Amino acid sequence: MRLSQLLLSRVGEWTKQFSNLPESYIKRAMEQVYWKTPRGLPQYLPRTVQRKTFRFTTNRPWTGQFYQQNYPGTRRKKVFIEPIKEWSFFRGDRVEVLVGKDKGKQGLVVQVIQERNWVIVEGLNTHLRRVGKDKNFPGIIVKSESPLLVTDQVALVDPADLKPTPIEWRYTEEGEKVRVSSRTGRIIPVPAATEETKDYKTKATYKEQDKDTVAKVVEQITFTPKLQTFEMDIMEQMGIKEDRVPAKTYWY
Image (tube, rainbow, N blue to C red; front, side):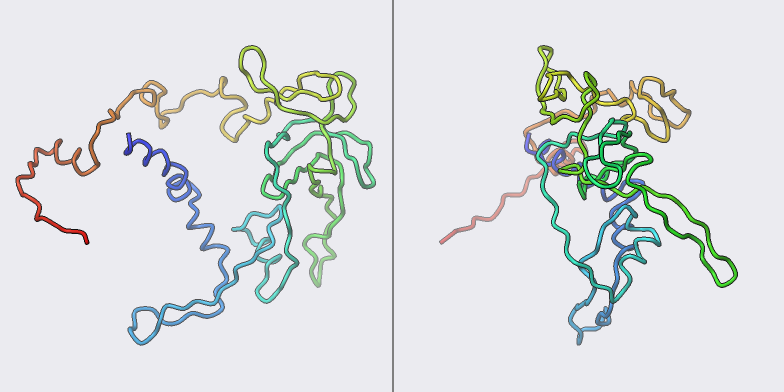
């Protein structure tokens, strides 16, 4: 039982370390080391001076745009994030903008950045920026959407009357957790676009490929919990018997 709890508690950590985009690569890509002592020499203590605070935006930490926004030597004001107990906005949701030049307009959420409480609404809250400017080329003007805060800048649209509404999470009689409009009591379903990935539109329509692990193999139970430590389990499988008697120890 303890071994099972230990393995389950480490799943999240191992996923970040050994995934297709490991955390070590992200850390190595975004680190900015200003100075460090030589390694491997006994007369030097391991000391490193590096940047510890970064400004996180819509750009991923391993991209060149992130490096430009956090260029070495630049200092940015600290951003405080309001904690949200239950996240209620998903990709594909219809929301209404509550602030800015597009106040009162409705659109679909195309991107969610939960680390900053941001959503990006398709075609709304846009700004113009110049890309590719050079000495011999004036560049081109590109329209891009700016993020909006889910706390006070957007609101979900009630499908009953197509007006913005606060929502709350409730449970149906079947035990399913759903979003419900606080004003009308209408259920606001989670959009199907939430499950969409680069490999499939929905999980039900995905076709297994040659290199995929078959679902039957994944569902097989290959671990049997025992009241043994990891070392004891290995010794039992390899036929190793411990005949030594541990020496007596005394605690004072």
